[in-house]
Image (cartoon, rainbow, N blue to C red; front, side):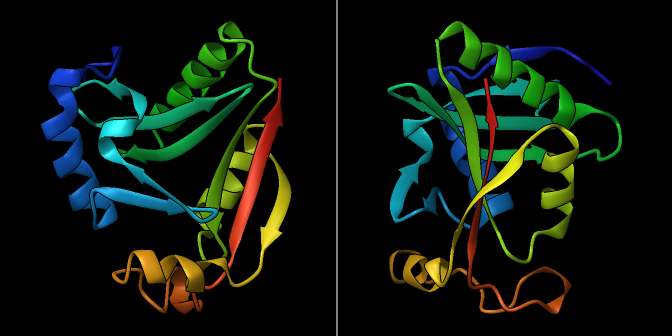
Length: 156
């Protein structure tokens, strides 16, 4: 396995679009009422796309917009998180944050083990997101009704 992390480039955009469609069901993400397109993010690619993290920096905040590890348990996600935290510090961000959903128990554990803390609950937010992205299912992982957004952050 190639273990190099590199910065996402403009040349990667067609592949990023396809990756998001394959792994997230669309070329856009909906988070806290905002629509984020694949061509509006920065990111890091691990190896031959066995890992991908995308983010946006706005003012003094860095938001992780997607994280995928196609080979779980090998430290790929952790290395990508470490990389974006270093990037955020270099860019003088005061925090790194992300949104996940109430059904994503694996992500909740993963991020908290890496120092992220729950910082907000947006009850019913997924219902609103479905208005912009109707493909969001009603039932999520573990047969849990998909309805709320949870924000996690790590202060820098």
